[in-house]
Amino acid sequence: MSRHSLVWVVTLGIALALWALPAERTRAEAPPEEDLSQGSWAPYPEDGTGAATDDADGREFEVDLGATGAFGTAGSGKCLYQTDGDWIQKSKSEIHVSAHGWWNDHSHYIGGECPERADVEVWIQAHYCGHWQCWWRTIAKSEHRIRAKNLANNRVTARAICYSEVPTGYRSIVDVDLVGQRDPPDKFYSIPINIECRPRNY
Image (cartoon, rainbow, N blue to C red; front, side, top):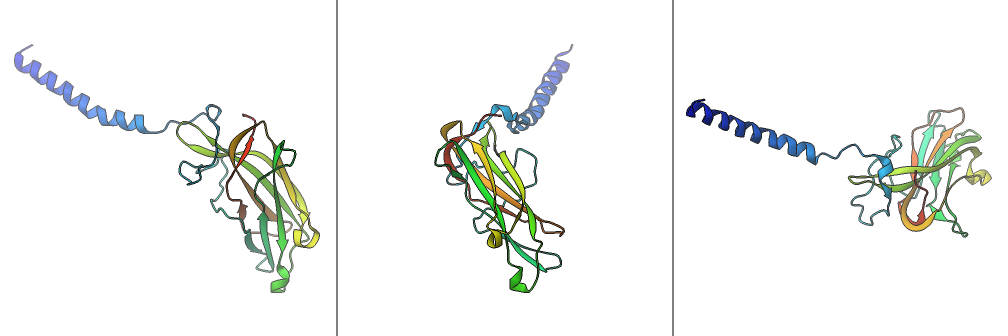
C-alpha cells in the first residue's frame, strides 16, 4: 500500500469513528425500558421533582390532583353529580392504609334527576421508582354499586396492607359510572401524601 493510500485509509477510519460517536452517546443517554421488578417504593418528593409522571399499569389516568371532588353532568345535563374521595390514611391498628370514594347527587339544584345508584371504583396507588424514572403503581382497588353519599351515606373502601414502616408516597383515584346513563370520564385524585407504610413487593 502506498503512503498516500495509507494516509487516506487512516483519515477515513478516524472520520467514521467521529461520525459514530454522537450516535453512540445519544443511545447511551436514552433511558432503557425498565424492569418494574428492579425498582423500589419511595416517598413522594415534597417539591414534586422526580415524581411519578405516568402509571405502571398502563391506564390512561389524567393528571388532575385535588381534594375537592370533580363535578360532572350526564343524561343531557339532567343529572348533576360529584365524584369525590378522601386522602389515603393509615388505620389506627397501623396494619393497612385505606382510601374511600363516593358520589353525591346534586341534580335537585338544576331540577334534574340522577340514577339511584352508581358504580364507584377506588384505586390505591403507591410511588415506585426505578433507576431512570418513577411511576404510580396500583396496589389495591375496590368497586361497588352504591347510592349517593349525600342521600344514603354510602361509600366504597379500598385497603392495602403495610409490610414495614418505611415512608412511601400514596394517592387515591375515584371513578364513578352512573348506572343506565352515559357520564363523562371525570375522576377524583387525592393529593399525594407520604405515609410510614411500605406495601409488599410485586
